[in-house]
Length: 116
Image (cartoon, rainbow, N blue to C red):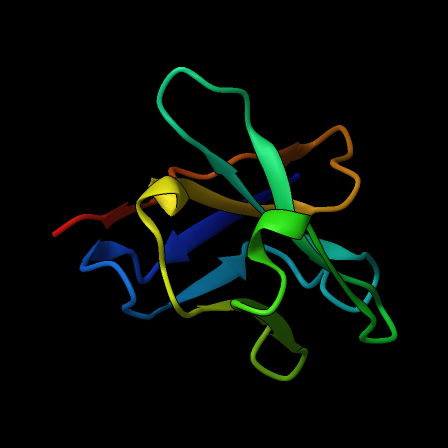
C-alpha cells in the first residue's frame, strides 16, 4: 500500500506562484509515472500534469506553459511549480501514480485558492 502527502498550497493572488510537493510512504517514484490531480468544488477530479519514469512531461491544455512538474528520485518527491495562477486553478491538489493503481490511496491533498 502506498499513501501520499501533499503540501505547499495556500492563498495566492491572481498571477502569483506556488510550489507543491508530494512525498509517498514507499519508494515508488522510480517504478511509476507520477501525476498531479486537482478537484474543484462541484467538479470531478482531473489530472493536470504527468511525469513519466524517464522524465517526459504532459499537461492538460489549461495549464500548459504555466505549470511544471518535476521529480526528484533521491528525495522521493514530486513537485508542481505553478505560475501565472488564475482563479479557475482554485482546487484541492493531489498527487498519485498515473494511472492510479489499487492500493495507491489518495492523500488529504493541499488546498490552492487563487483570489484577490
